[in-house]
Image (cartoon, rainbow, N blue to C red):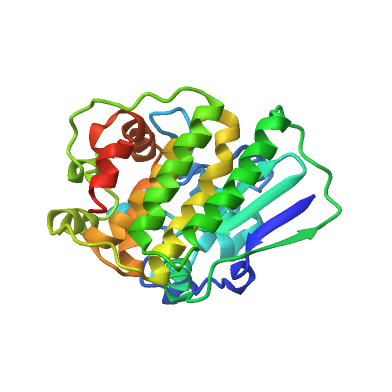
Length: 320
């Protein structure tokens, strides 16, 4: 298996109870099948077993989750902002989401790509402070490739196209807004090679796109309410935001042939930084609200295709 990561990936370290936010508060945590199977082996005499059984329930999607405590805190988050389940039975037996956060993992047969999400304040700070161009490291391990039904021709085409997208984003000889405009043009060409893409006519306003129906942190609503349109700056952080989205989402078009929406996410990510706050905390809030809420993310993906304000033409007007 080939493992691909951003060059700073191995530098990430969770700061646990010292974190300015908590990944154990505000959102539901799924209890995956492997974890549930292990919990079933625990003695009913154990306090942690009793606590686990008392908070398992189903969400509106039919997923088994842990029922949250007051203030949307995980029921195992103690007063020191540490995990009682981790303490009692070990981190390897916490749910998959907890073990991997803030890492995201994309498997493409013989290649696995891993990164860290803006939803973690520490990871967001790392990308905010990164001044040199974002690059990626590859290494091999002994793990066998994953079975998949990926169209190999589409995958290698998109992989090559993503390299070109990286080059466009990192071209510091021109302004960031010019790079984003060129990126959208290139994405349109790539999309045309994959399948037709009809720009939407939904009349949702640009700022209403960010008023998510599922609210995780009220601070995000305050950010949206106070948003101010401005000019895109030529900062390394804006470049890193675009690179993050292209790395995380671009190749996923091999599953749905929708590469243009993935590129729009990169452009909109820079606009989020420009309009809502040019700092790592703003991107952290957006990511936690959107990338880690199935309901909000499904809505966002729909609007990327259907909202007129997110069409290529309308997005380009924001570069003027």
